[in-house]
Image (cartoon, rainbow, N blue to C red; front, top):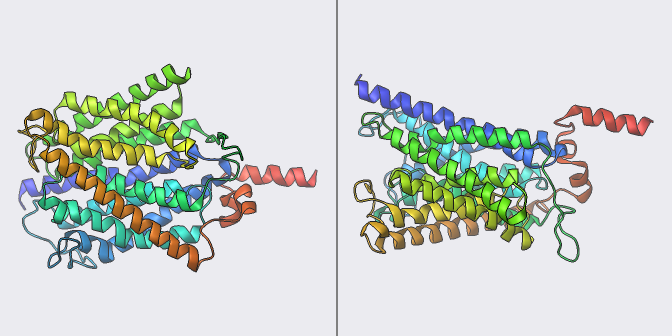
Length: 421
């Protein structure tokens, strides 16, 4: 066996493990950002829905993205992938399949940020199946699988649009249809803060995601021979660092408090933003991209909250707004030497051509993901008599109402003692 083939396969397999482990980061982030009474539900549904998305990706998702004999919208082969090898990709096809499967699972997890603390478990089940079959693979084919946006030279190295914006637009559809959580807004429109129960969890979750992102971005090089993965990792880290610091400083200067939640979301926004451009821009640009993302996430969080869009995990700001900015940034900062896809950016003499392609890509991809997700949820709502648990079930918490036990069993013991006392 060729040594380069083997090393590439090992490297991408390591990347796959890191990306799947990001689910652990999302569990801690989402559980810590919400209330204790929903923690077990959040952890369990993340594993459950990743299992569902894995099965759908094996059956049809991979084929819709990378299949042959298709069209500019979807591929039409390689369904029910059986482990066969495809020549010419430089690594094990099975490893490549698993790597792509992990990305699909992450996009679905992002989508569910907008469902948190109020959606029925059955909604997660059905939406997982349809999103994984009809939403994510279509956008991924357009950009990564030889579809029409790839023919226009759309730049999205590791998925600011494909993974993050797609998931965020599904989250937007979910939170609009589900409406705000009980007690989030008063009749006069004023906001009641619903704080997460564990900032240590959220901080550890962000650290796990930060580490996992090296598999996400650097793993997307799909090889080790030229060492380029190190440069991609460097850009990734710089953007995350700049986003975290910028978000903390802007929140401190505007609100008078150094908000931990904003700082953590700034780090994630920097990571999301650099995901599209990590292989196309110089290090100074990676720093600027992360910096702008960190500042932007602060204002975006305030914007959505004032408009009564209850987004408990801030998926719209972190993955949506930062995903748009990150995708557009390549149209500004892509260098002639690094723009292996598309053209150099505006600041490197490429004019507005690549920026126009990037704008078209985020507009069409975001609109498709939102419209399809909205329609799917409307159908689920009508066929299942609603998307949301009852008000009583929401107040009690989804741990008890959907699963019959608390993620923190001590809570149940305290409740029983109160009732018996």
